[in-house]
Image (cartoon, rainbow, N blue to C red; front, side, top):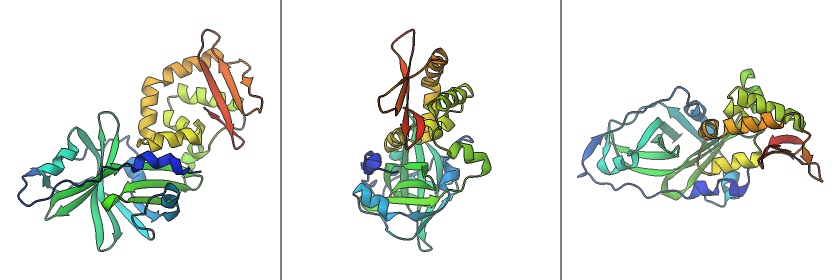
Length: 284
């Protein structure tokens, strides 16, 4: 379930457009550098349905309450931009680009960027005569499997509004394991987390065995689950795997209501906890 507070930090948009003017110097647009392991572009492309209810729950005004938005990922930018707009691209890599269309007569170019710290931003580009003269910038969130049957997409729109979009998710058979959430019991949750960490399947662990609340916290910070999982694998996974190995075979301490189970490191104060949410067990 998507909670109203889950995406509020995403709404603090830097919506002031870059200055316009025919007299501004023109500079070449940066290249789009596509990472073959970056699955965001593949998930972004296609038709999305505007979801007015999501925006209303968040307490904001919808960019457009009805209809469809078609996103075409071409990974090409217009040839040039003003020097003022170029400052928005400084110290960033353009990870995807293309166009998004509300109707046959209304469309905008866009760029999805990422900086050295892993922060992703979405830029709506306003083009005239092949030159980007203005852009509106804001955080970006694409939550695969936000609900059991839908993906959710949050994008900045013009004039400080937001697009909230959704579409049905029909995973291929190869993806069905990743879509299943939680484990039927704490022992299965323990062994599955240990297996996924051992196999370095960090994104699958985040998608399937991290609590929905924690996934919400990640996406409302403006990051994708893919980016967060990569950082987790680098910085935290080795120590968590070591703790799981030290506590394997231990009988966990259960809470009075039976909805949490804690494994404690016999050699120190560190612990690992699992919680039950709606009858399924997750890593807390």
